[in-house]
Image 1 (cartoon, rainbow, N blue to C red):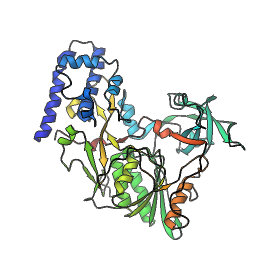
Image 2 (cartoon, rainbow, N blue to C red; image 1 turned 90 degrees about the vertical axis):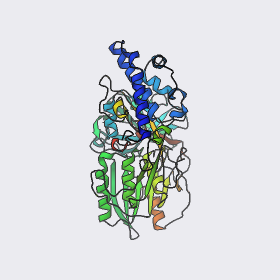
Image 3 (cartoon, rainbow, N blue to C red; image 1 turned 135 degrees about the vertical axis):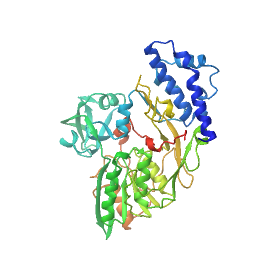
Image 4 (tube, rainbow, N blue to C red; image 1 turned 180 degrees about the horizontal axis):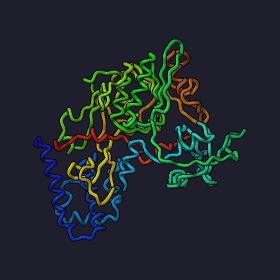
Length: 482
C-alpha cells in the first residue's frame, strides 16, 4: 500500500471511528436512519467529484463527533441530506432507497411495456403529445397495433400536460391506456378514437435493437441501432460486429439517437470494434476529485483501446478510419464518450442534432465502508440505500472533455414527427443522409428540418431510473486501498 493510499485509508478509518459513540444509545429505527445519513456524507466526502467545492463536505467541516451528529440530525431524510450536499453544477447525481432495483436497472432489467416514445408540447403550450419512437420485442407493445411514428394525446382518458405526464406515464401503474391521435388537414392533432392498452412486465432489454447490412453504389454498409451501453450484452454487440466483418462492411452507420448512455467499459469495447486501434493507444483519461486523483497513478486513470471483452473473447473489429454516428439531444453520456473518444483517431461524422452534454461518470456507492463504499462486501444489512454520484470526467486522447453544452453535429438534421421513417431502412431520413454523404450523391453541408409546432423535447429513455447515467462497472472502479 502506497503512502498516499494509506493516508486515504487512515482518514476514512478515523471518520468511521470518531462518530461511533454518538450513535450507540439510539433506538434501532433512529440508528438505521442515522446510518444511512452517515453513509451519505462519508461516501460523498470520499468520492464526489466536487467534494472540494461543497463546504459541508470539507474534511475539516466538523470539529467533533457531536457537531457531525447534530448536522446529520438536522436533515429529516437521507435524500434531503444528499440533495443539500450536491454542487450547483451537478445535474445528474441521484440516490435510491433500493439498490436491488438500481442494480437490475444498470444491468438492463426493469419494468417495461415495450413502448419507447418522445414527448413534446403543442405550440409551446401546456398540452403534451407523445410520439412512438420504437417498440421493444416480446413486450406488450410489440403485441399491439403500435408502430413507430404513431401519436397519442391521452392516458386513461386524461389529456397529457406538462404537469401530469410523469404521474400518468412513469408512476407505479403497471397498466395504462393511451388515446391515439393524428394530424388533420389543418395540421392540428386530433384524437382518432382508437386506444391501446399496455402492461408493464419485468423485462431484460438487449440494447442491440437493429443490425443489418446493405449495398449502395457498390459500398457495403453496416447499420447498427444501439440503445444503451449495457455490459451484460457486450457479447451480443460483438456478435453484430462479427457479422459486419464476415459480410465485408466498408462503412458503418452507428445509430445512437435514442441511447442515453451506460457502461464506460461497453463504450470502450464498441469504439474498439469500430476503429481497431492498437491497445497501446489511449481512449480516455479519467479526472477524479483531488483526493482520489492523488491516490492514483497515471496508469490507474488511463483506459486504452481493447482487443478482447472482459471474459477474454476476441473483439471483432472493422478497422475503420471513418464512422457515421446518428445522435441528438437524447444521446448522452457513454454515447457522447464514443464520439469524443474516437475523434482523435478517425473522421467522426455526426448527423442529427446537438447531444445532451453529459461528460461526467458515476459509480454506485453502498454502505460498505470496508471497501470504501464501492462494493457490496460487508454491506450494512439495516438498509438498502445506495448512491449514484458523479465522481469524475473523461477526457479523450487530445485532452478534450468540455462539452457540457453538448457535441455539435457535423450535419444538422432534426428528427421531428413529420420525418419519422422506418428505422434501419435506407429511406429513413437520418440514415438516408448518411448514405448520401458516404456515396457522394447530393449536396453536403449543414441542413435542417423546417420548423414544426410539434417538437419533441423529452424521451422516455431519460425518465427511467438510470436515465442518462454513465458509470464504471464494479470491476473498473479503482481500488484505492491496493
